[in-house]
Image 1 (tube, rainbow, N blue to C red):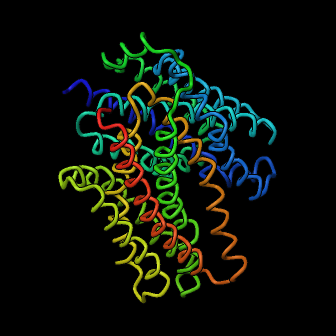
Image 2: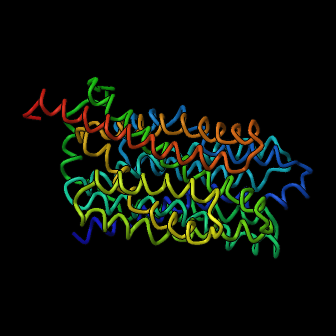
Length: 393
């Protein structure tokens, strides 16, 4: 019992570095622009490049995990994160920053896919929702830590120091995973018996696709809030600083609502009820935020209600994938997610461009999270059909 929670802590720390390194460019933006003469568009490209490798690397990452072992691929991923951070620290041109960002992002993708699979292996039989909720918390925690620490570091030293710090933390995370992680006996035995070939039946493929769409819709709705809600509040008379500070409440509350909400959802024991209730409430709150005269209570409710569904959704692939298929299945899960996320986020921006109304992206986000209810219904129907066809599986 204690061993698997210790392993979760080690994997949580490694994934926190993933979020920390992602945020490093955003925190360093003023310093990069002043030193290298780049503009906001180029900063935006650097931000996007970190997750872009997920479209092509998530599935191969799962294959590599089956072929060479999860811990080795995580070590490779964190090594690439360290190398990318160092390349950015040494870079004196935008081209080198791009190269470093792609390198570190590729490593982060490998880390993310395999760490999720490793947690699933240890917790699939018990407390998987709580464990996944805790793991998901590591991403916003890493971002928040970077926002708090890096500006002070760079003001006292340089933006290169921030990039060096991401390298150091990546190496520390690598060492931590190497020390604490051991594969569960069942997974180790399966790896000895089964070949690493890509083997999915059509049912698994469909179910993983649907779970990934639910995860994408959930995350896009969340991403729309910090991306577009400040502009909405500013149009209602709030200052830019006040608007951004108010919306940031959602992210800070997530640090509590994700793990506590996951544990509560698992204790309630009715995942469909929790998901439908939270999705419906989140959709309503997105609409209310656009018109409610006092946005603070709405923002507080959003921060609390985004917590419970995350662990449940992250655990859905574990429900439907054979243990021997988890690495491949989660690779496919993240491939679809990384492909859908930027498209829907861009569409949210497009709705603002077309309408000229800062409330419209919030309406779009509300519709997306309500659409997730329909996708959940399709997922459960397909899952029940698969159970009837293969009652012994």
